[in-house]
Image 1 (cartoon, rainbow, N blue to C red):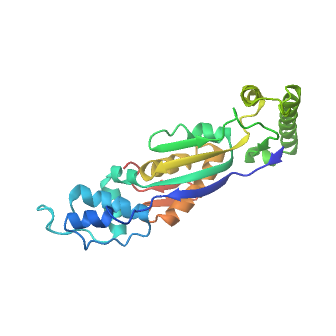
Image 2 (image 1 turned 120 degrees about the vertical axis):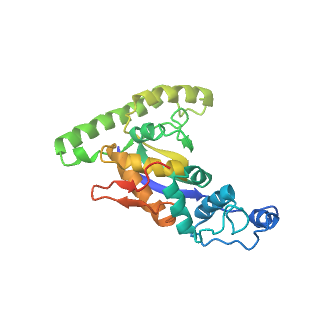
Image 3 (image 1 turned 135 degrees about the horizontal axis):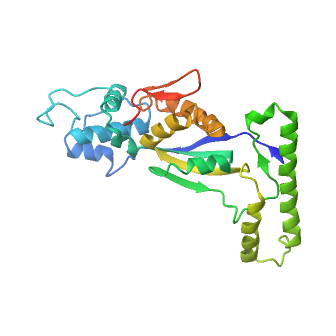
Length: 260
């Protein structure tokens, strides 16, 4: 058994395309070629593009109902947030790898199905040779509980190795379909607290919702820890999109507009 800590990696994010047939050509086609944004990121730029497209608010006069347009990305997105025009936030997305998180964590995370993409390490294919494990903080100060829990994990770890030996999974003659069949059965003798990896892609509308829900005081301990770090990353990287979020003394990330 190896002790682990959950880790957060931001590996991908929205980027605006350039070249032929991209945004600049569109703006030229609608006679708004001189429109510019001061967005700090492409994600915030894209959300602004979506909003301005909806109302044809690139500049005054393009929409007969609009005599003045709001300037500046932060102010524009602040107004979108205040108006709860949440659909435009769905165009921008981020991809995180959550590594050394438990399957307790991933079982809770996959409940958020709308606006996300998920790829998780498969224990049908990945055979366990050790069981990395994150010890809940509630148990860390209790030496007896910690040791007895660790002993249980070590016993399951030993049983994994026993099964691999018994079914000769390392024999050069063992074919992969048989390995997969046995490996799939072996995972039933692994704890839900087993550390794993999951790639999670979310649009910004969903991410705002998940951060609020999963940093709430009543949320599960590990998922609060992870999404506190996620919130710290995205509020710094996309300040206009998350401009209404503040962190309470209890570690809750609370938006001014809870539903957009």
